[in-house]
Length: 303
Ligand SMILES: [Zn+2]
Figure 1 (spheres, protein in one colour):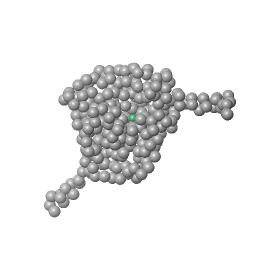
Figure 2 (cartoon, rainbow, N blue to C red):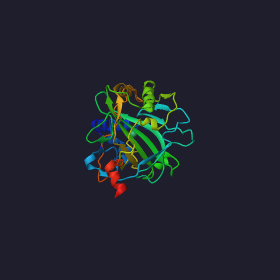
Figure 3 (cartoon, rainbow, N blue to C red):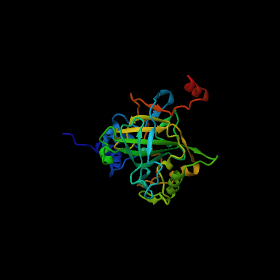
Figure 4 (spheres, rainbow, N blue to C red):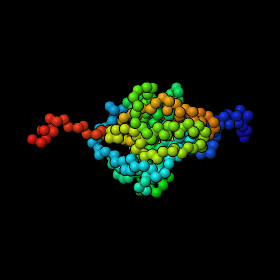
């Protein structure tokens, strides 16, 4: 019979400690993303996100544009932004027409209702995007998460491969230059000053639209591929749309993300999942049609 020695026992405890820390309540830790799969097997499965997207390795596709339903209509309620310990997020309210904003079109077969908006960021020393675009990490990434309206709840949608679509917007820091138009984002970035503690929340005083979170972004130019949630349970049910245009963010606004704290009072920094393998997945690039030149137009009319 083998009696475990003290060393055996000690080593086993040392081995289990990170798991125990990671499994405390329902939380996960960005310092140990390799351990997520032990509680959430899909995190170790297929079609995972984020991935690196390179314009030379994508397939140009003549797709219809995305349709942004009610994106530019005012919400019927004020937005409450919350520090969840992993990110800052807000639930998307209904618009004054009683319905939530939605997207359809592109490769989407159905209507997808906006559920929530959250962010991923780095630190003073490191970039904070999850997706890599043309070899570059960026400073901040915003995710607008939508649920297929075929499914009644977000949890139900996570069981189906067409359950979710996410719009991803990358931001690059600017230190000076002309002002830019981002009224919704301005309100959200200012709310960060009230959200330093875990579970704190702040209600924005202005009525917003979801479209105002996109500023003047070119909504017609995006990359799209099949992937997953980038946080546990990592469900591989997401049609991703990563916009090709990168929005500017003032350094003063980016720095507000670095002042937040998580559940254990640690600085909430680098809330980004490492890159995942593209495997044999295809990435499509949708670009708006180029406007016809006057001479081409004449040719069309007279020939
Ligand atoms: Zn996200």
